[in-house]
Amino acid sequence: MTGPEQQTNPTRPKRSRARTFVPLGIAAWLVLEIWLLTVVAEATSGFAVFLLLLAGVVVGAAVIKRAGRRAWQNLSRSMQPGAEPRDPGEGGGSSFTMLGGLLLMMPGLISDVAALVCLFPPTRALLRGRAEAMLRRRVGYVPGPRGGGFGPGFEQDRLRHPDGKVIQGEVVRDDEDPRDPRPSRRD
Image (cartoon, rainbow, N blue to C red; front, side, top):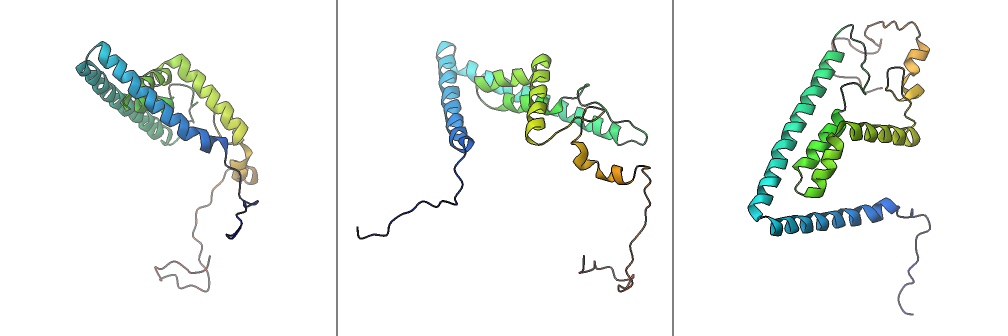
């Protein structure tokens, strides 16, 4: 052997299964979508497939627009003074609705079926439950009293100040000129 010996780096992390199989799954999904579109085009016509794909784009855009408008209305309603936080399960569901609209806009029949699963209310509720269970396991998501929240990690301020009083003010340091508009260099 005249060349340098190659060694594997023992500190290098092992490649995860997701990084290996997700690209392969996406490639298989794309090949299956193209194959299914050609089968449908042979059975009907290329123009019918084109109209089907065009209808998916139009309906998907309408679904995303409606879900975005509903999410914006919910946000503006919750930002009004005296508004109580809403339960995310009641009348919401904009995340899976938007995902369904996006899947409808993607060309392909399998993505259209997945979009309908996201848009159909019983399966959307099932997907929401599965997503919450996954978040609970991975991130420590703990539903609050009104159905949402990330648990005690984000409640520290309330624990330290149980009365909830907020005193607004401005911090002025003695060593700074209060008329100087530049932020201080020291933090």
